[in-house]
Image (cartoon, rainbow, N blue to C red; front, side, top):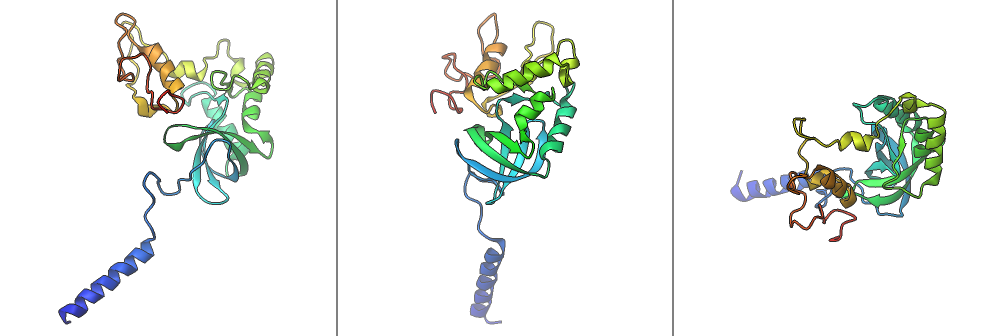
Length: 234
């Protein structure tokens, strides 16, 4: 084959391959990622239930969004009732259509949102079942959640059958003292919001030296991970 024909053939083949592959995703977006904003609502189908309060929702207009349930914290998988909370979430919304109302956006676009299923507000259902805590630190005005938690506790439902259940945030943030096993090293990428990082920072800093064993306060001003959502540098 003449050289000029060979070059033309290769160029045509290359262009055809590009057309088949389709456009590359925009910078900062993975395959299937969708951009959302606080105040936005959308409908979609739950395609993944990671645990009791974290889900993947494929929007009806396209794109999948990772959702962290607003105002609710379910037991960790290693805690009592952690598996039960995940199973309940799958039963309520797994593979089903839901309505999502975005409250805020965490690190790398993870959306904190309310989720409404056919049976009602998912957070309310989980709390009412005794399979979730009202996350008062991040949703202090959710008086309905607080009331449902009190009712579940008084009725000894779910995790409230335990004498002294440990809140999942306390389970995650247990400090280590002398002679105890140290907690897993964390950095700012491991938190969704600045207040969450600040709480961890204050609980895990060295009492004797005021140090920063996890390196969360880069400029030493006592404020951790200032660039995270909710921080002063946002």
